[in-house]
Image 1 (cartoon, helix red, strand yellow):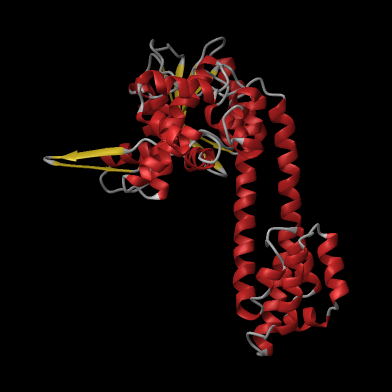
Image 2: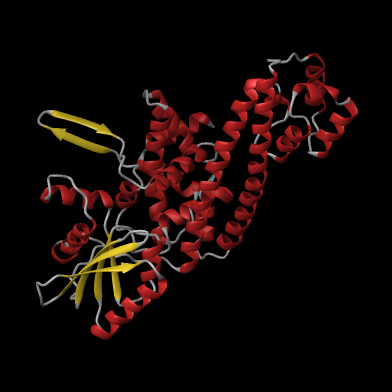
Length: 422
């Protein structure tokens, strides 16, 4: 976001320390030093009444509100009121500010509301007013984040399923196929143990694989022969019975989750197709149906949100941190950042290696210099952010040919590497 160049004059300033049930408020009028403290229950009708009282008290004037979150129930409740200008404060920044004045480290809610009030009245030039994106962009942003949460849950369930099968039925990891599929769920529901699958005829197994789209005759034949000669890992009835019950319970959670992810993918695709920046973010090589909406959510629709590409790099945690003390200087990756944002750029950079020749050349050069895989991908993501930012600012889709020509014009060493690869 662009910082305000001129300090706006507000009728009053408010610091809110939010909680799930009760919010603590500290209010100070612009021409007064008196702090009014109060509490609000987190109820729609109570918040609505409080906002109406503010409008009657300061008709036609704006109020600055500092709060310790950039999203959540309280922000969503206040964002619809144009006369309230919201200033989100990073929780870590507030904690450091608290420590500077109260060395005991004790956290007290009413005190935090006073600190937020002090930040917005005395240090507003260092804060950024929250400017929400349009509704469509915010919807896509929330959906891609929720989808990622579902995928993480799915990964946890498949990991649990894999661990359980390794205890008593490890052969199923090869016979059932990818665990995060309907085929695997159906296989394990029908044949949860080695004894049961060995009772199945070749015809039944062939029909099962055929019904699930497996047409590789050699693979199916290999599985059939393995089933005939397989030996159980354990014959302990306690392990088999308990593990089998847990497998069935895990499958019961995994199956509807996969359906939900597929439905959410469909909803994201439909909304993304209607966004004005759809073609822009689809133009990045390797973005695809999953990563293109995530790049959109990372950048947003408001072109005033970021001043330079460095703002994006730092917010996403892709830009490295340089620490100096005396003659000592070392560089490390950034930890205080938006983890989902960093993950989005990191995953896109890794995917682009397969689709963009210059990205492959750049990644290979980083590996040749001794950097590990993730370090090389972060370095590539750092470069991609500059490209994405420029395309986003100019509203111009990405062109691989144009970028490679720019590399040649600058005499970049990547040009020679690209030629060598091709």
